[in-house]
Length: 252
Image (cartoon, rainbow, N blue to C red):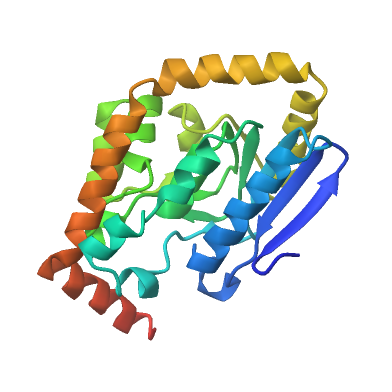
């Protein structure tokens, strides 16, 4: 275990289980993101590891950014600190990552799952991008990756209304690759990872490059725009009011 991350190897597959603060929904704190970033780089450099499985707890994959951290940020601080850049590096990992989503994947938690090569989700998982309800916007690739996977209409529905998708709905929309009963999600994700690990490593790597280039060839420019707007909105009175109200309601 490394801080808020449990690391387990099963042959050529490394499981990264986020165990930050389950009672608060496994938020993506600064410490958890740093631990995850380091773990992905370590797995990438380890020749014995071929594939990663990224998961959370039974109830929460992750509820996204820790709003107590977000509430302290200004736009200038966020830009100068390269806020959210760790997700870019995880998305560019040279080895496949399978997200195993059980329970809630909310905001940045959902966006983290979307950076992976594919998502295996519980049929009753709950995935959403609710940021506009608290005065911010998705800033970790959510708008762009949902748009690419499901099209503009679905992206607008999820981002502008905060609509919650079940695992089954997300699979039908092409956002999730496979679904399973919640109790079987980890086993299913590992079956997928084992199948990838058994194939030619160079072939898998080149195939992933082709898939990513075809689907994300122009993504970097729009990701920079998304991140800039996500930073700028931190300084609005509306954001301060809504995030403050949310934290007070949760007693945090």
